[in-house]
Image (cartoon, rainbow over all chains, first blue to last red; front, side):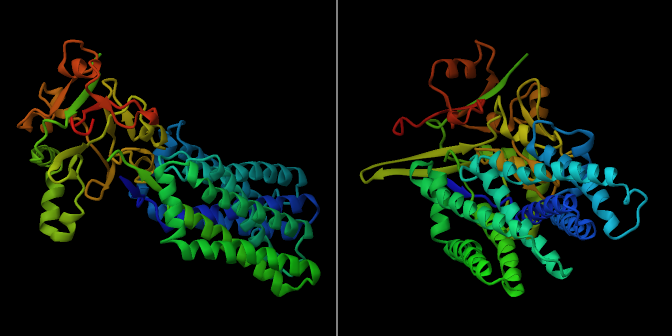
Length: 281
Length: 198
């Protein structure tokens, strides 16, 4: 018997989306900091960390007994991907937070280049690990659609795309020019995410019954979401990117940014909600 | 060291559901009483540690009916234990997979990891719940409630490492086989399939 998973819902989708987006923005912000854009980078990094915190707060509402979460620290199971995810999230928040906080409060170390670079570098490492964790979490389950090396890859690509989206929004809000290389990079990650998602669908024919059922759901019950993902999440940002390359405009950039964030949300939503497991009977 | 195991003979099962009722009476009495007081919807959504499904096979006049049982498989290599972030899910030295409800945070990662669908969130206990092989009864020298209740002895419980035990004989004879062995979880619940199905 094949059963669609009901244990994880939109709150997990939002946590993974906001978390992945936040850490990717942080990494971009740190790279921009290294290039000399000090003040703006700290604000962008702060926006990234805020997104990560928001995702974690939403995650807490999903936990059946959040007050027991302390046990992840006092009796962690080091074989669990989730345990590592908790560590990575906390460490990304601590180092990333210390790096980004001077954007809003004056701190004694903020003028020390060496300390700031170290904090940003460590924060970026843990941010990348958080990004990888979002997909690995799903890959270590009994749900065949998720149990694939493509899941962490897709989730990293989605994080990089949406992170660029948030970065563009922050640059627009602070009246800064978006780096053209980041725009090119987000087009590349969108294209790769499109290919990966399509492979998920194409591989159904040589996969298990549960996997086939998940893809069947994508193409029937969840067809509106699938179409929305392909048209609005993947195709539209690529078309707008080409238009922007021809004639840059703020409206186009904001549209691309919002679509990149939507792409990440829709793709994760589709994958989480179509996850099905094959029970023995 | 013992290694507790169960064999479920689907040929012997008459689908009476006594095992399910005994399990509820032994382990989930308060939850059942609450569901009764809450009404039909709560009763329909009431989760059981073990359940029996009816399958009708074939076309008239060659029709047969058989009953399938689901229960925690108490795997040797339990994926639910390895994914649990707090160690709330654990395996005892006797090979029984249990949940420490105090440590359970309700992330339901174990629900996603179990390939048998044997786990569920218990709102009443605020913890993941599942079959425990009635470890409290077994420790007191009794059999699990479902085993002692079954009128046809369809469920057999014992030590897999004891060559003289019935479960050990059934498993070593090849008559009883595990479910989803391809998952590599090495379940310790074995099934004797209906003759017509085999």
